[in-house]
Image (cartoon, rainbow, N blue to C red; front, side, top):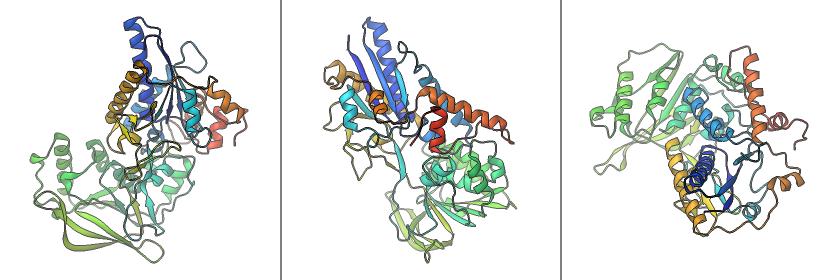
Length: 465
């Protein structure tokens, strides 16, 4: 890659896409400095939403302080490459553009040496049990999108259930359970939109039940998520001794699990509380059916245990719980990109170490590459593997030169696509922060929810669809 100037498109501006762009830009810059080459790279980061950051903005509960640090880190990666300075511009953010709607994947491939898919996973994975279609049965991803102010979901959410079931033993399940159990007044300092706070203030919930298929030694939480659960005001944590038979924190597989088991055991030793809301943690429960006439009335589980080989087996006991709503937090399913191969069973783009199978010049990173598992650290290592292979392919002459020489923005302008830019995001960011400063409750920001309003603030004077 001694004198090659690369043009690369990345589809998705969540952590996976931003890390990939940053790693690629830095690798090319470091190679140029170390070897005295004139190699350069221009990266366009496409996002279907007007704002960047993907699930960090729209898929994580906003009462997590550490999320601010992640957003700041992603911001720094993109802010180093301003839109209005062609000499310094390496990464351009192009928001409010959906590949497959506003521009075809084939049109991108005509204009770039390589395209990296980083679309992630935003849909709920299926839970195949009878009654899943009943009114009151919700996907956790949909609920999270609502309370995070996603522009493409309804502004209201039904919160008339007193007793709620959350199915899942991962961090998303805890996010959902915590937000449902938490008093809205304790969320006023977060960036939750006002319509969400109003909905939560009117919530009828008194009891939230979280169900896991396996035991306490198999939880998929992280220690900080679990600790935050125990710090929620006026909410009692309820555990059941039968779920902990034979569980010894000292024999846990790793230190993180030891910490979490000690935390759970500490909660078990607390005296019965008198809080107005309760959060029940149940283990060894496999969902069999959601039951009700037209809407959720009960949920049925098979009681489980670990067999001699560690496999999950049923005990023959069936339990039912009276609930009026069910939230399915059993995982995410990858977001397909029109024109790219897709593995329907796994919900990923088939690939080998980031190279999309049978598609030279097409790459994948993040959850669309490996499935919706792992934390931010895995996303970084994913991106590094993909970028390493893309650079190797470029160096070996395996990337075809773009057929079209025009700037993709000219094509979007000709189609009157109201795309947003990094400067536009800075304007929207400043606007949201100003709303927070003027809010009756001290808040870091107040999110603008409607898509058209976000675009109008990002591109003043431009008509939106």
